[in-house]
Image 1 (cartoon, rainbow, N blue to C red):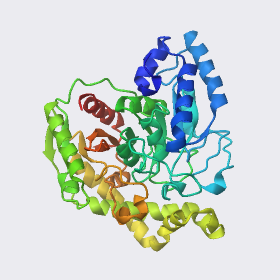
Image 2 (cartoon, rainbow, N blue to C red):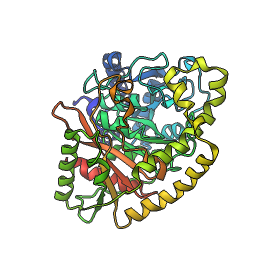
Image 3 (cartoon, one colour):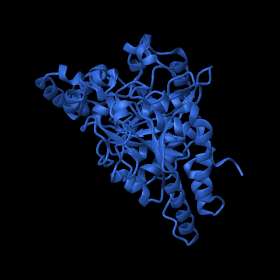
Image 4 (cartoon, rainbow, N blue to C red):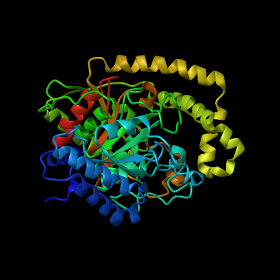
Length: 439
């Protein structure tokens, strides 16, 4: 039998339901792979191996009795270490939180368990989702395609775990690209859902008006299966091609950017040509305020981040590494009138994007301007350059998905980003699924 760690959730689900693969065998394969690979990757913070194995055996018995709950039944899922799982620490990758045990499951974890998923354990993040890779007393997380490269963050462990086959699916969080950016650099698919679609109760908050929990997996189809179990819309039927799908291309956003890597540009143009071959109608669009959207997003999220952690920053500054302490204090430089103005501009920019997207099913642009950078890039020469094109869509609340569109000559993944209409997450995933099957 093919190594189950190399299969998608959709493929595994068929095998499990048909009795050709048992959940305990799948779980043990994941645990063995973690034991072999994670000492070099550092994607996993904690495991609930015994409890998970008991649940996998119970799932096998339930399915054998005809009690199959759906596509996630018996599937191991990893959880970013900002989201509560009862009995495991929610560390936020901070040394002082190593023993901070959660007493209840987050709402989304509860939903996954109800769907029959096996919660594998907790996956690495950046400290409080704002620090650098390796801060907080935890080891540096490495990109599985090149151990000298960064996986990006802050959902670093989730992206690495899926890419390396440690688990077939994982939860990440996205406040400013933290699902899509690591998905791009690790070559997996990650969805930031429409704001408010997925319950964030049990998530250690960063910016309450922008925090999102989303799925990360090998394919858009797998993300759709996870999203439905998480409380999202039902999975829609697959499309044979992109005939009739209209895609807007905000080329000026990336083509004129000084940080754009020529290999990313070439892969992006090849993907666009493939969309056309698949029947899509493509047209250039203009996002005149794209840079301002990022600035306005920061003027909202940074004060909210400081509000969440300001008291602890003041009372116990040594609990935070230097990078996290500096970032979480950034909001203090943004005065209240500027924050209020940003909230007003957010509504205007949501309306402006809706106007630009009228007549289109989605927009397409790169997720990141480069492929994975060397470890330590955050404090190196690239530290002052924002390589991500994700943050503006946290401001607008749009569903946005990153998926692998190709590779550089070095074999590093390149991510493409599809942005959809609010509440049209299922349609966006359907379009991405067609593209993934043909790229």
